Image (cartoon, rainbow, N blue to C red; front, side, top):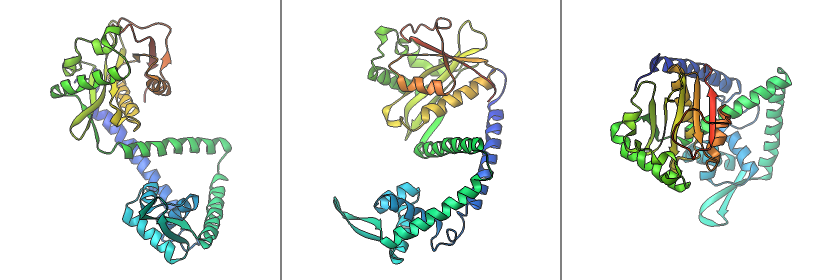
Length: 320
C-alpha cells in the first residue's frame, strides 16, 4: 500500500529514536529513585516489600490481588508477603467469602512502619519538587499521567497484533463492520457506511496510493480496524474511515493507537488535513477525535455518500 511522498522506514526510525530517549530517561529515573537498591531508604524493606506494605495498608489483599496491583507474578508477591509476615508487619487469615484463599492485612507494627515509609517518601519528593516551579511540577504530573496510561494500555494490548490488511481479511473486516453497525443501530437503509458496495473488498480499495487499512488481530481473529484514504476532489485532504472495534477489544486504548498510526501515515504521505464523519450515537469515538485535535465543522467536505453521519470533523496535520 503506497505512500505519496515518503517511506514507512523513516516513521519507524523517528519512533525508534524517541523510544531510545524515553527508555534512557526511564532507566535513569528508576535508578535515582532507588528502585534497584536492596533496601528502601533506611527502612528494613526491599522496594517490593515497601510497595506491598503500601498496598496492603490501603486495604487487605489476597496474593493474587497484590500481584496484579504491583504488576508482578504471584510467586514474587507471595515472597514479599512471607517476608512481611516473618517481620510481624503483616498477618494472613482465611478470606471471609472464600475459604480457599488467604487475605493479608497489616499488623499494628506494619501500620507504624508504613507511617515511617510515608514520611520518608514525602521528604524525598519534597526535595525533588523544591527544584521545580509550580508550572513545571504540573507539567511533569500531566506527562507522567499520560505515560502511566500508555504503559497500562500497552499491558492490556498484549496479544493484540496491529498489521496492514490483506485480501484474506476482507470477509472478517466486513463482518466486524456489520456487527458493530448493527450493535449501534447504524443500518444500511439509513445511509451509513455499512451500506458501501465495496465493504467486501476493502483490501483492494485501500491498496490505492495514499491509502492504507490496519486490522487488529487477536489469536488469529480480526476484531477491529481503521483506514486512511484520499478524500475525493479535495487535494491534500485524507479521510479517517471505517474505525470499528468488537466489544472484546474495547477499553484497551486500541482505538487511539490505531488512529495515531493512521494520522502518522497521513502526515508521511503528504496530507495537510484529515477529515472524518461520525454520528452522535458514537459518543466515545467523538470524545477520542476531539482529544486528538479534530474540530467540528458546520458542513461536510465533499460527498462521501454517508448522509446519515451528521457530525463532520477536521484535523490540521501539523508535523508530529
